[in-house]
Image 1 (spheres, rainbow over the protein chains, first blue to last red):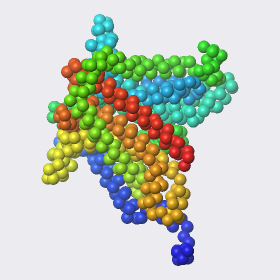
Image 2: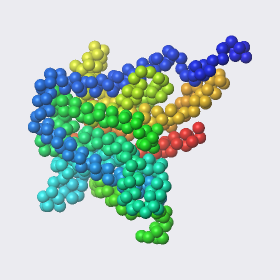
Image 3: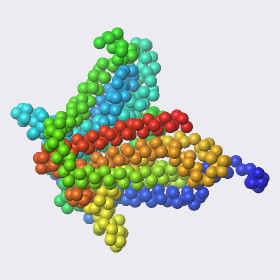
Image 4: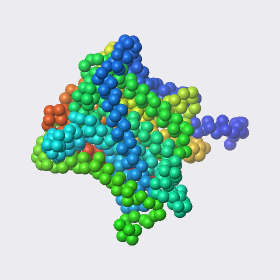
Length: 292
Length: 282
């Protein structure tokens, strides 16, 4: 009781002190966090660019302009250009079915959609080898038809689709479930058709979450290594994606060239992070159901 | 297929497109995910139990699984501690650069694993920036199991931070105030009031980081040194068996890992259900 009389009645600052830590603890914790993230996250990123430019701009540009590097860049872009839209269409269809209708087995379906995230990348590649490889289930038949999937571009596309499978769906499903069906019901009762309702009502409601999912899926599609390594065969200039090209150059002790190609992928990561942060900041309400 | 016959399975709705959307979803899901995974299970079953058991108990397989598990567990544990500190600092304190730091947490998600792998190797190799610092103490990081630990900690960090952060943000601070009023010291409040509330999220993050680490390939193989029985991870062993055209071995090891992932997925789902229940009570 005596304490109460001695302490001047200060409002907010006093209150904050009671449920926060002392200045010393705060400074130490912030220092630990900053040091940790600096050493653990920032330093590897810096070292990519440092190693890439170690011998100056000349070798850097030469490494990127090299024939096989360009082929790897083209293949990576091609694979992403197929895998990302395919999963976009799937994500929209899955979210439409799951969020706008009530049916049995819904939560099981959602679990199945998330499944590829819990499969090792290596296993993701292996399953297609078991299906379409020379000794796989469909291997002999494919060979007799002259179709090659494994150690060719179709296998790389399939493996990439597998590892990026849930990205769009998992952003859209919670958001569209939260938004409910009233907007669509209103549009339809006013005479709009199904597609009209989708393009004019549903799509505008979810466009930023859609973009968010595409952004993250694209980063993974362009950067996937394990799954693609198993199915690609790593034929230079033909089935080498950028991450695989990085590995080959690195194993051949061409460090500058390896880090030059890696720096492009690191820039992709930085752009992805920047856009992601921007979307979260600007449209947090419209991608709300995602995390927070 | 009209509403009457579907009644039991699906509630009627005025919105069109259910058949098309669900049909496409199921077809695509089956073609891309379910049938290929079934091929793995089928191929494993065709090996027969004795052959499967021989591969599964092969000393090299067991060693690789031990390396993958043990180090993934250690990495997830390290991340649980540091991830909690980072999440705490990001949610509770104001300081310059906080937003930038927050955005940076997801770097391991965005950075391709091969790039992370060669960057970490360059840093922790004996002639790298950090490798040079620890060399005088006789510590070798790259090309040893410690290197694997570094790589797996790197890729696991965002899982803990991103699962703990939202729970910490939603935590009712009046409970802490009440604890303080009742005479609890700050650390007591943290240990007895805050930590129990964060525990489900912390465990979920731990399980997610663990699941990711066990399957991780790209960021590990450059820094690991890949010495059989010492620093050879299970995913790498699958790749090695594949390049030797030893499909039965690759398939069997992949099946073991898939089974492990499913168990972890189940645990994660249970933890998340627990976590949600905890939130609605508190």
